[in-house]
Amino acid sequence: MATQTPTDTGVVLEDWQAGVVGGIAGAAVMAVLISVMNPGVLTGAIPGLYGLSGGVAGWAVHLSHGAVLGVVFAAVVESGIVDRSVGSTVGLGILWGVVAWVVLAALVMPVWLSAVGFPAAPPFPNFAIPSLLWHVVYGGVLGVAYAALR
Image 1 (cartoon, one colour):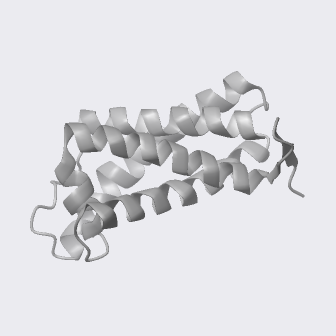
Image 2 (cartoon, rainbow, N blue to C red):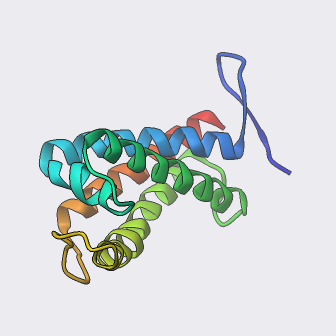
C-alpha cells in the first residue's frame, strides 16, 4: 500500500507521484546541464533512441525517462532498502543516478543507438565523465524532491 504524502500546500501525493515529480525535476535540471555542456546529446542522441531529432523531442524523451526512473526510485525507497530519512533518501538518489549512468548511459545507450542506426553512436562502453556528473545531479535532485514531497 502506498504512503500518502502531505505537503505544506495541503496536497497529498502517493509515493509513485512523488517519484514522477522528483524524476521530472531531476531530468529537467540534468537537461539544462546537458544543453550547456553538450547540446548534441539532447538534440540528437536522446531523441535518436526513438528515431526522433531535435531539442523538443530530446526534452520530451528525457523528461519521460526521468519520470519513469523516478517511479522505480520510489519503489526502491519504499521497499525499505534504506530508512526514510532525508539524508538516506538523497544519498540513495545520488547512488540511483550513478547506477543509471553505468547501466543506461554507459552500457545500454551506445548499443541502442547503434541498433537503430544512429550515425554518431558513442563507443561501447561509454563511461563519459560529464555524463556521470549529469546523472549524479539527476539523482540528487530526485532524492531531494522525493524527500520533500513525501
